[in-house]
Image 1 (cartoon, one colour):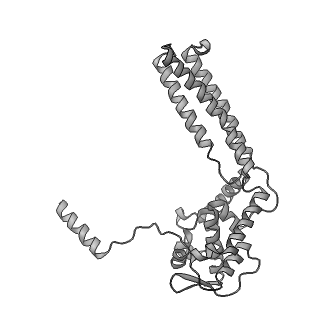
Image 2 (tube, helix red, strand yellow):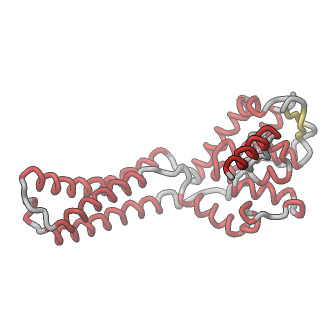
Image 3 (cartoon, one colour):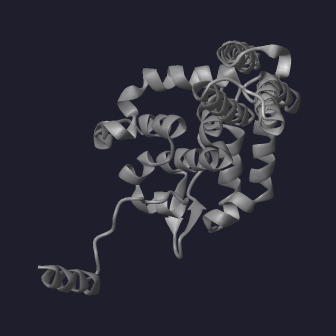
Length: 280
């Protein structure tokens, strides 16, 4: 029998090994990327940390829209309507430059200037420690390897018991070890899914969301009573849906999906009424 340890004691040793490996993995995950340099990111950069390039570009466009520097044109296009606000983020200026002529949102996103601004934004966030570098992501993945090693030990014990018809303990020990191996493999797999944002960035977003909890769309704020800056802050921290409430046409133009159920067409309503009548 593997190492001559009975079932219950082996299960306790296995649980202790899993706890130790899990503690190491979580510690490395939590400590990697805690240090930052430079100032805290602005709204556009926070939007990138929240939901990557798509939301960052939507916040940039909404910034121009709220400042009156971007208007809707024909055929679901948009066009610059004035100068960009002073002190705008580079991505805001890039979106403004891309919309000097009427452009669809897809054309704006494909604009070389916008893509260059996004690359520079990512480079700055990596340099300042708000995004994890490739080496830091690899370190977090390697920290989860001991969990797979511990699970392999449990699987070897079960396999040896089945192959050599040896006792691995009572049914409870065998089932417990089997479930423990499955849970360990699942936990290791989940810990290998490394976030792009650093621990410092996640801490910054949590703090900002608590400070602006009144802007959470789930609380249904009265956007008509809010400043334009509040809408931009809500977008950067919680996603693009606040734009639907204050400017639905523009939101649709920049790709914000309206997930609210649409009213049925007359034909659909008549069909549903016939089904209800038959159901009675």
